Image 1 (tube, rainbow, N blue to C red):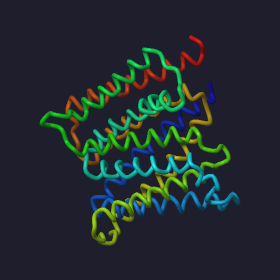
Image 2: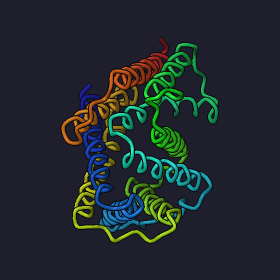
Image 3: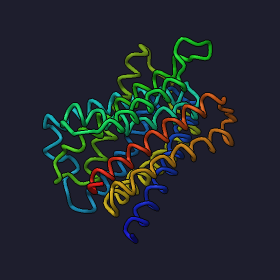
Length: 290
């Protein structure tokens, strides 16, 4: 139980840090282009994780980075990071964070398809409700629909694919090596976005660099806390605390960016979280034989 409490504490810390990272990056995009912010963010994060590898005397780039599984992971990371950056820049933080909470449900669906995991009808129902919650937030076909919400949906698919590929990544790769690879992909996403813009963006401002540095520092802390959380306690106990990220994101969206999510957005977010929590509970019960 003490290990589970420790894991839950690190998970809550990680989610608070991720919410801060998102807010710092969103603030950075208000002072520079999204591509420039991504490039700077990726290079700063890469430098921080690479320094960890150097201190440990390990190679920054593990040979497994070029294996098919890791290339697939990088491709999904590229998809997730690119569209998540666009969502943070152009969509409300509250709705973006709400849609992102569906990632564990998408991971479960992917595990069924890719790894052939057996899932009962209750978890199928939970997944269906989770996707219903996403539709409530996005509201396609209604006047309140915003095309920028699709950025968050595509980001969710990318992050879910990355998490699935991470499950098959070589255990020999350290957290720092995985982090270096991930942030290198972030920079590539920024370069790709800059190329698609068709023109060289202006250099980042001092404010943009300050916010980006804050995002990188908090992001590395979040990544480290998440790793500690998943290794400290039982995954079935610790993982549901991921949803605290939405609480922190809503508080920041309200107090910092002045957002006022409408009732349907809050309803959709609640449906997503409840569906995810129920899915975690069913998975834990199945694992214990109940």
